[in-house]
Length: 437
Image 1 (tube, rainbow, N blue to C red):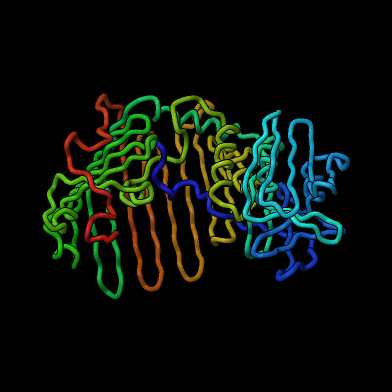
Image 2 (image 1 turned 180 degrees about the vertical axis):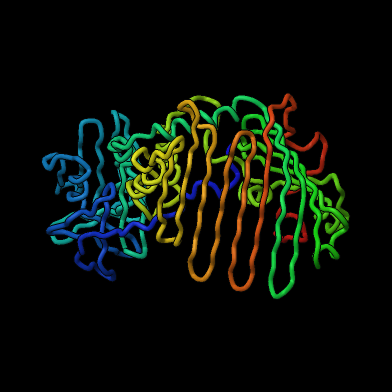
């Protein structure tokens, strides 16, 4: 199943010092830089600028850097049209018009824009986002450094010389959990202490998985002040399928607070909400049981993260991932492969260990220790044999929390119920009057 935990390999942002050549200030704007595939572009006679709240780039300089020959970049004075024409791609914009025309492999498309091209000082300026996206590039913006980020993501990935054989071994280990159904049974404890008061909860859970589908049930007991406010033990059921993106839960404690509510009411939740309710799964691995190489996995991860984080170059994202999961990041220690990396922006250090037997990965351990702004947080997760263990400890502003959980995996013929029963009442979580819209 698609992993619902974020406490595993910490792929959090690794600060990259984005620096570019200083550009001459444009109307109403300060210096603007451009990173192309992770490298700063140098502008000699025309510089990027912000006009009317839109970032503009000099057409010829950027498209030359994108690989177009200088003679293939032209300006037709009679039609006031600037054009970059390659072997199978042609991009053109007309001065003063809010559109860009793209001819790719003989097919012509016209896209409306919210900013027109303009002429200044004998140079054509075009809106950065529309021009670069027309060339098939990803376009981002780092507001802190006033940097336009233009990436040909596939070219960046094609230029990656790192190897990922150790990661491939882990993915082979992970695939077994996709190829058959499992029942996971476990227990957990959590304690929160503040101001001399302490609240704790203990519980057991049972979970069934099959591919991307799962169901989960647990019973929780509380001690401390919170126990007095609850009607005994708290039951929780969660069902879903990460392949379809459907997630549902119900709880006797929640429905008891809903006016007219009944135990049979299921609440539909988002992936983020479900993640807060679920026990951790194994390390992020496969979306299906099909064999996937470490290289394939890394490329998919970079593409996904590049779409989620538009403030960094895909080259920086690839560098960060490779520094943690590339073969050059791992050190062989007996029968284990160990990788450690610092995340300065988070004040954290992440250590990943893959254990092996007969050349195959048979377990892992991940430690993520963060210390920043007076807060401390440590996440330790491991899997040895069929037992998953997790420990999370944090302390901030006089409040300390500790959570420990175990889960034992066993092959099972029982299939999960990934959706509520037919005819059951289903309500979006935000519709519950106790939570607001």
